[in-house]
Image 1: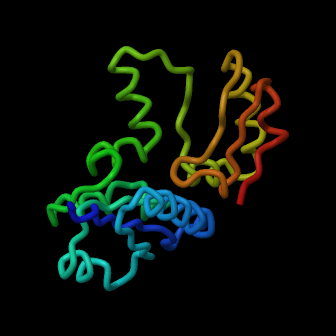
Image 2: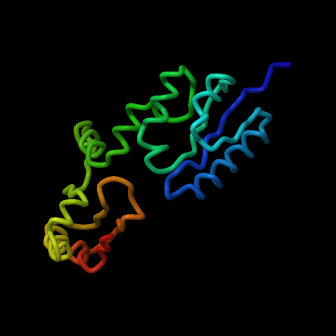
Image 3: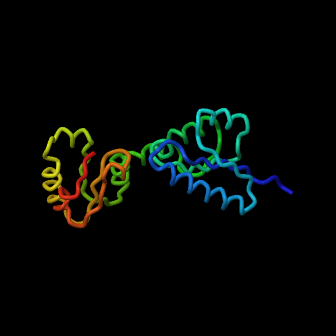
Length: 175
């Protein structure tokens, strides 16, 4: 009988979505074990590289949220170590993590996307006490449904989705 595939599920990490990642990782690991695979569940830490080198799994299944799991760095490390993993390669993940860059690449491929503008958090800070006015003004120039969110990590910074762009200013939460 063939030896079962050895899978390392990475979950947890240091992002604000750690708890979700731990729950998701447990579900993935349980599902894989139910199909007869040899599964280890690991929270990435300072010993991860040594563990990967000492006892390399057949494949890594990353279930990490936030920058540490979605910015391509981990996948780049796995590429350098020659370890297979589930998901997009490191370069693709890095490009997709930066939403304005990803939008530009999608548009260049001929896929229509909604109108947008990218403003960094610092740009909002420089607007002083007038960011709500800025958002109302920009929102009025966008037609239809739109989404406003910070550049970089998302929901915890106050992104939101609205059908009436002119009302953006009333919903903007700056932190």
